[in-house]
Amino acid sequence: MRKIATLALLATGLIALGCGAGTTDDATSKADAGGATGDDKPKTAKIGQPARDGKFEFTVKSSKCGVAKIGTDMLGAKAQGQFCLVTLNVKNIGKESQMFDGSSQKAYAANGTEYSADGGAAIYANKNAETFLNDINPGNQVTGVVVFDIPKNVKLAKLELHDSPFSGGVTVSLA
Image 1 (tube, rainbow, N blue to C red):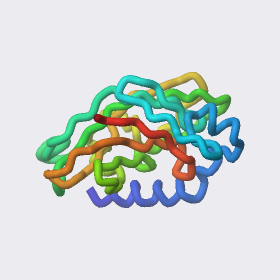
Image 2: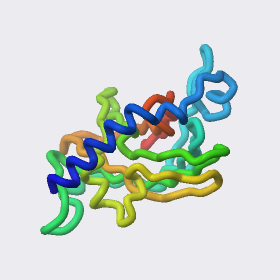
Image 3: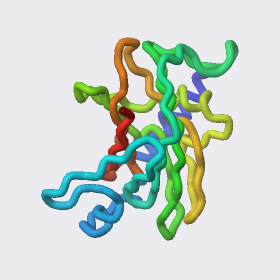
C-alpha cells in the first residue's frame, strides 16, 4: 500500500512539472474545446453528451455515489465519507499523444464546494489503470472510472473535466 501511495505521489509531482503541453492559450482552440472565450460562458454538457477541453473529448457515461469501499478485503480503499464513481470515456481528438490523469478532474456540490479526485481509490476501481497517467494516442479512447471521496450527506451537481492540470476545463452537469 505504501508503494502505491509513494508511486502516486511521485507521479503527481512529475505531472505538475511537465503536463503543460496539453494546454492552449489560443482563443479559437478554447472555443472549439467548449471553453470560455472573452465574455462567453462555457457550454455545460449533460451525462451522455460529449464535452471538449483541449485535446480530449469527454463523455460521462454514469455517476454512482454511496459506495463505502472499493476493491477487495486485502487490496482496496475505504471511503472517509462515500465514494462517487464517475464512469467516463476519454477520446484524444488532437494530433499527438496526450496523457490523461484522473487526479486533474474536479467535482462540485450544488453549494460550490470543490472535491478533488481520489487517485489512490481509482487504482482499485479500474482494472487496467485507465485513469492513472494513461497516454492516449490521437484517435484512440479509453473508458475508466474517476473516484471522488465526499461526505455522506453531499450530492454532486457537476464535474469539471480537464485535459491537463493547467487547462480551463469543461463542465458536465450531473443533475
